[in-house]
Structures are given as C-alpha cells and as structure tokens.
Image (cartoon, rainbow, N blue to C red; front, side, top):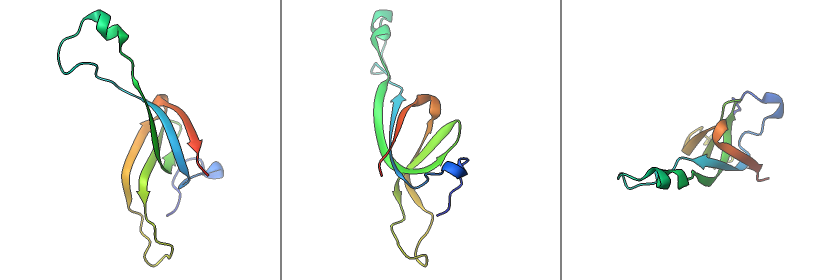
Length: 97
C-alpha cells in the first residue's frame, strides 16, 4: 500500500497508533432532563488503536485491520474498521512503534 497523506516528508502511514479523542455523549435515554442535569454532562474520552492511514491538517484516519500478506502477489489495499477523526476532537496521537 502506498501513502496518500499530505505529510510526505514526515509520513508515518501504516504505523500503529493510539488516538485519544473526545466523543459526543447523549446523556439521556431520549428523555427530557433539567438544565442542571444537562450542565453536568461531559463528552466521553475514547482511546482507539489502529494503523495510521491518512492525516491532513483537519483530520486523521486509522484502520483497525490491514492486509497481512507479505508478498506483493497476494497483497491488496482493503482496509477494515476505518475511523476518521476531526483533529479538533483529537487530544493525542501516540505512535506505537
């Protein structure tokens, strides 16, 4: 698989990473809550692990699964469980190599 990210000179594509990020949190079971209860809610802090697929100034994309073939004859560019995170939600990216 070849890199397509915008950081060619510092490319780390296909490096295993852990992304720490903020996720939205619906605090109710689709019911009504008071303002006091709503003010107490916080977003969820999530850790996701995968292979870095792409990064730009605005977002980062990882995939939990990539092709495991070592020979080019059988290798493909299929990815599994792909997630894309807006950089504004990302707290930290830890390179796991």
